[in-house]
Length: 221
Image (cartoon, rainbow, N blue to C red; front, side, top):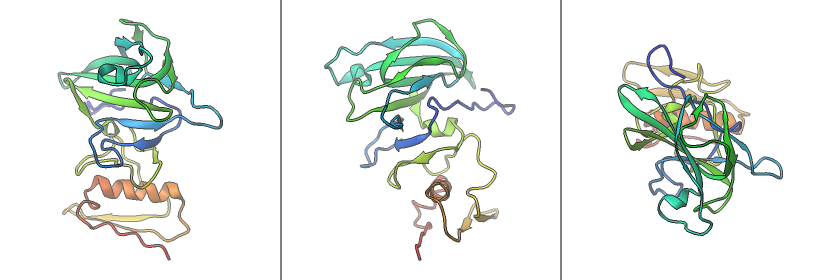
């Protein structure tokens, strides 16, 4: 959707928002996308939804064996959305088990476009999600809200200066934050703290560059 300030808030393409790989892979290599966990109970085939209104401008059927080039995406859908600040905005959904849209079809935000799977170059079931602006991939997390968790502390979220298009009112339940004009952030959390709250605090510290600067410290007592 388009916000009143002109920014774009995309809908999460899955019902659950658990990131297993971020803009950088967990080994530090460049990913330029996010991977979302699709396993729920005994199934990994989950509905995939359009992140915003738009038109399907590419679909791809996996050939069943090639794992390089465009075929690495497996069964894939790409949607072209309304321009953002004059630039072309697209989202891509990869490794689908199947899709239920066709080239040129108009879709609304939240419409079902397919189901997650393991096609293409994958080691396990997940949804590969990209946001492309003017032909270049951008960190999807800056277009989404901040309501997500990560599969581990190794998952990369934001580069310095990046953050979700909509920030939570408070970094985590029970956390107190203070910010001054220098952009410094202090967070003091007294346990017990849930994994979700701990991940939320860590994500905020990453977004402000504190982890890269060595200013983030976590102690368990």
